[in-house]
Image: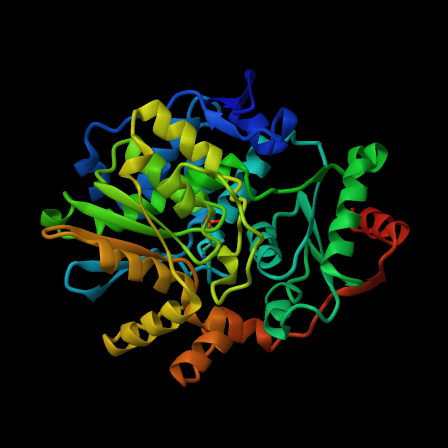
Length: 427
Ligand SMILES: *Cc1c(COP(=O)(O)O)cnc(C)c1O
């Protein structure tokens, strides 16, 4: 698989290089130079999730990694289902929250971990270093957990993430080291940056960021769009509209890639909260990010979505006008109202999924089938959901299990020498 840098088309890399580097020169995103195409989607849709996903991903990276390797990576990464649920006649929810950290990021994060292990030189050390204000840390920790050739160090601001979130990723042990820093999230990020700027240290412990714009994440996410369609009655597969709750727009990029390689989707809807840079851009043609606003759907509080250049590139290549994308922005008040409506219809949702559902119900036409992505488990946003619906959601298995375990975090000051010592100690 060849990929090029969107900011410098001369820079071409292999899948392995793209996974290891994350970003190209000038902070450019990598994009596939060629896309596979599946003529016979029906027979692909008959396969089970892991077999089909192996076929899809092999079509991209089969020239670099053996089919058995890809099968093993997919088997290790996709150890939980992506079921659809009927919310209303002709409207389905794709539930992407059955993984260990209860959010769709488990799919991409775990496949990225597998990819990184597969493309690394066997004798080279790898230490993943990242700072988190909560969610990313959990997904990264669980994705790399138990991979003995890769060490993970996660910094977070002590006392500034929710106790439940802390339990989810600071109770693992083995190759995962979590550090509660006496400082703010910005201090944690600054420490991480300082480590990456230290060439000697970088080399010594093999620092890698497992960055969220890594192409391997998007490739994994393509697979669950196929999985959703495979579960629908055949008659409903033809005029499908898919609504995607979006922040950095990785999920929508993956959906469009699924369509580009043959999945029949009539139209996508780019659904956001009031951080609506993209909906405004689609309406007016002007890219004018506003300051980020805090909302109930906080994983989508992004006003400079970093995957957008990939969407522009893909649409341009395929000759899809941007005017074929549906879009809309939903306020907190509307989100709460929608959550209540959905509950009355018998479906318990959370703010991100509710935004996608609302725009889908508003924009779905006669004879069309709707699918919206549920990106997180309602319990992950327990306080908000309990408050809006006046309920008390039970913690699902993984959260309950970790909630009962002791915290294993180290405590350190906001001090680079202390971080360096931790990075050396974990080797
Ligand atoms: C990350 C996240 C999103 C946004 O996904 P993007 O790929 O960044 O657009 C939506 N919902 C939840 C729950 C998330 O964690």
